[in-house]
Length: 219
Image 1 (cartoon, rainbow, N blue to C red):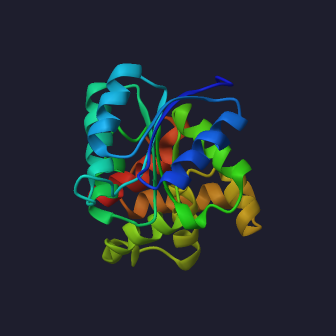
Image 2 (image 1 turned 90 degrees about the vertical axis):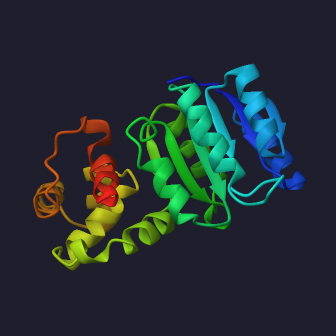
């Protein structure tokens, strides 16, 4: 894993944008460009071809979904590009589309600004996304799963807890620690979830849990 990343930032709030620049530099990363709108994000990423793009969702010129549209376009143009969405909102349709893509499911993250309470955890998320992992805020997971409630009725309350933690990208060991159960119990829950949702565990080990949830969200 690279210790220093080449990053392009897109955030229209000046103070937050500058804060992100200094925070990322503090952790040894190189910020190639920090811009405030969708077209500038496209231009900067095409010019610098970074390892990672960190973008807001709503930015000028339209203050709608410029950040996500730019991220999707860049992922299409640069298949190896990692994208971390950092937003105030859960834009459900666009979040699902961004995450619900086999090409985009590796090296993709969606975090909510107000729920980031630890800079070390944020820095870790940046590194993990750039390394090819999927990092999703639990609230994003909760709202996306809420859109497909009927199939979840097949799951027990404990399996729902495990499913939410799976979707966050947590390992079996991490889930076991969070729920205070054994790893063997977690493995049994995961097997049951995949069976009930008709999702056989065929994806690569590193992303099997997250990919299973994203495949489920596709319905």
